[in-house]
Image (cartoon, rainbow, N blue to C red; front, side, top):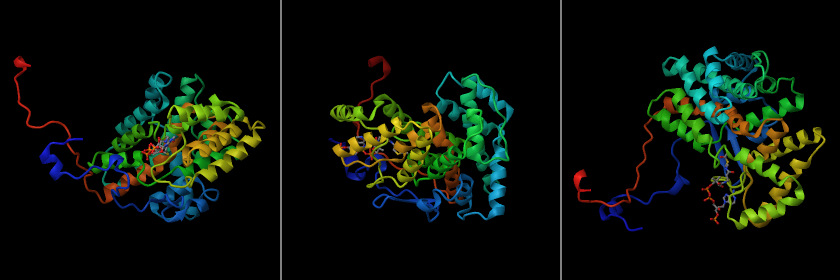
Amino acid sequence: MSLPKDNKDSIPEPVKGLEGIVAADTSLSSVNGEKGILRYCGYNIDDLAFNTTFEEIVCLLYDTELPNHERLENMTERIGEARVLPKEIQKVITELAGKTSPMSTLRTVVSALGHYENNVPLSELPPKALRLVGQIATAVAMIHRLREGLPLLEADPKRGHAEDFLRMLLGKEPSQTQIQALDLYLILLADHGFNASTFSARVTAGTLANLHSAITSAVGTLSGPLHGGANEKAMEMIIKVGKPGKASDYIENAFAKKQKIMGFGHRVYKVDDARKPHLKKMATQLWKERNDMTLYEVAEEIERQVKSRKPIITNVDFYSAPLLYGLEIPTDLFTPLFAMSRVAGWTAHVLEQYGNNRLIRPRARYVGPIDRTFRPIEQR
Ligand code: ACO
């Protein structure tokens, strides 16, 4: 591309997609893409996956320490209380649910929740941030029940987050396997370095805009199919393929058309995503208990077919899809479920950004024409 001379001389080559750029320090999580290791505050996700609850992970991200019993009880209670939404929010959801996508409703709900929170100094902000962790779960359950015309179920603050969400969403008592599966999902997706939605939350917080503005930015960013929206698209593909025997033709055709296969590829991982084996293991167990493994087997076959054609990694969204579908969660709620987990990381990152802030403001390289002759509107 030929550039205006003065620009070419003074501005360095941009890094497209900011690939490899280290934008700030964080103490929350680290991703080793070469080895496929994800750590929260120094703890390997492999140790946390089946041995903690989502509430413990929220403690870890907020305190950078794993909790003792007392801290965990306190955290569970506070998230539980936060699941009781302000009555006015129900009106917002009633107005939108079913008329727009659940992610779009959720983005508006997060923004609306900001009206019920006063701006407070940083030292008083963590409890407000934490409220969003509880509130988003109830909002997602409400969005679904209201659009389906189903009666709403009150939050039960005494229950664990995963259990209470499933009860509020599905209107029945979840099994232990279902609770464990959702808890695992929430644990594994809670934070992941400077992924796109977290970064957008930090950019917004970096202007000293308030917490709810930052989380609204994050929800919007997560919704795209190249980020959180990929789980829904992956499940749609699995359903469309329908039988393991049809996966080969489907993938062959997709590659021929140069289509991206949702749930594959990643900017950071060079080997399979650190979260994949845990999600896969849990999804297997869920589908075995359903006594019909067909769609799960389709997913496995798609993975085989993709990898036989291209050395491409399986990302978190691929096995999230059969896991969530196995929990009877409708596909258009998959990305809101992702938000329900990632809000833990988003809010922790926003607090970290406020705690050591500098405006995030990169530069752009101008590539348009310069020194153009101005003509008044009458002469154009
Ligand atoms: N299917 C087929 N080919 C792929 C895929 C895919 N899913 N992902 C990457 N590739 C190929 C590209 O076509 C490209 O090939 P080429 O060099 O021959 O042209 C190469 O791999 C590099 O791909 P980019 O898109 O340039 O990689 P980038 O780092 O910009 O994008 C991304 C990463 C967006 C995740 C990409 O892999 C993708 O679109 N995946 C599908 C969507 C998805 O699953 N997103 C969820 C990511 S995880 C998360 O956000 C929670």
